[in-house]
Image (tube, rainbow, N blue to C red):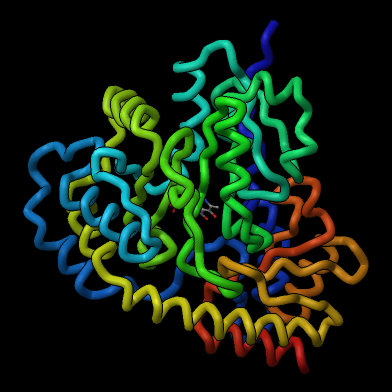
Length: 362
Ligand SMILES: Cc1ncc(COP(=O)(O)O)c(C=O)c1O
């Protein structure tokens, strides 16, 4: 008999025991666990949301023409990539697409059942496989993937800059790997505009065939509450996904599409946000020195990925809660390969991070 699915504890709920520990310090808990933005979105985006006049009719599931053109314009302006708007489609924030893709791809290729994903990584790559009744197989290097798993692969995920490590990957190698084997490469690029070691890169620079790039407004424009994202790439795959998602009823609300189009047309606010994150990463990296923790500046994203001096992530997370009054994520949230690290999201205002630094130094 098949076993009933039991949702596992949500990773961040596992921090509930540490929260009161951090809360006890004067000034309270500083939450550096979930990567949720704290800074305001641009006022012109909020104005576009309020004045779109797109509330009453159903919005196009694939995305409005202005949103898809704004996304194509952004690829061109920021990364020198030409992609026609017909190869761009909207999603309700990227998490639902990350989790939903195995299900949609399995319907298209029923004789394949395996999702290949990097480790350590954002937990939703593996969860999407589970929820689709597929196998999830973690890899650390492309060359190490078992050929038997390659033969069963529905898709391969890559995430650059990567969450939680911040690593930048050579996306050309991934695109070539997928094309040689006829396996779609899904490139999650939602931190692309926050890189600290060279420019951000998109897999679409290798051409769109056989690849899909996923992008989010959540991080670049501080719009995680709006739920707006988009995907672009292979003409046939984007067409298939947008059709199946239309049947399934996925729609980004009309006013949100208008706001997302406005946000994508502007880079100034993103460059300002970049500088905030850079400053905060540097501040927290040096603050951790008080605990004997060496945290290097990441190559990208807004997380410090710090090795616990005693090799035990939960012990370090407890120390940071007790002494710094901050909540951080033990690395096993991102798979067993992360068990010796903690992830610190610099998503609190400067004065709150300065408070953590003072507490750790004191
Ligand atoms: C690697 C990665 N992909 C996707 C997402 C989902 O972002 P959203 O659903 O807000 O677009 C996140 C959020 O933290 C993430 O870290």
